Length: 224
Image (cartoon, rainbow, N blue to C red):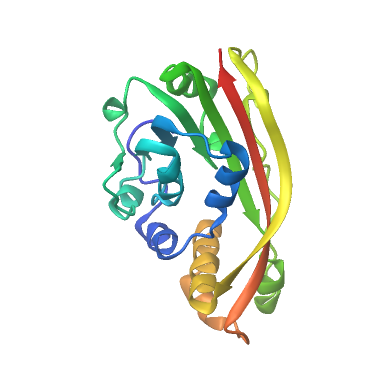
């Protein structure tokens, strides 16, 4: 994850901007517990759901994503600045966040990002995995097993030093969404899986609201 990119296309950005599950806020409340920062840098911010969740914890939030399509549909806020250009990132921050983006970041780029974090600053690695099995079985689809690591954190990088581990945790939760929100989530999943767009229309939904289970993965480190 470095230079401007179209890795996430316009269709995916539309689904992502329509609705994202309220899990970023839950993770941050657990890991930060009321801490406050001057500048938060959010790497791989997508359409800004994670940036919006960071607002209560920082005076200024900078969201970076190499996908121009994502940045163009990011949720605006007076304390958030979005960019898809590395040269526009701040030289210093005291909170550095990777919300589901570490899988796309190699050691070289990770070091470039962490060099911007002040000593004593916090680094957060987090992700979530929503269980769509009960919905996808309605169209006889199973999500293929991949090697994507939702729990990826600094321990997965060889010889990566200079950080003290504070929290490493995995927990389960659930959230409710209405039918339109569910369609947005499933649509994004189909788009990412390369499934045809009209597959969503073939699902016979029989409820107006749904409860979905999700696994939360988060780690926090202090730079020393």
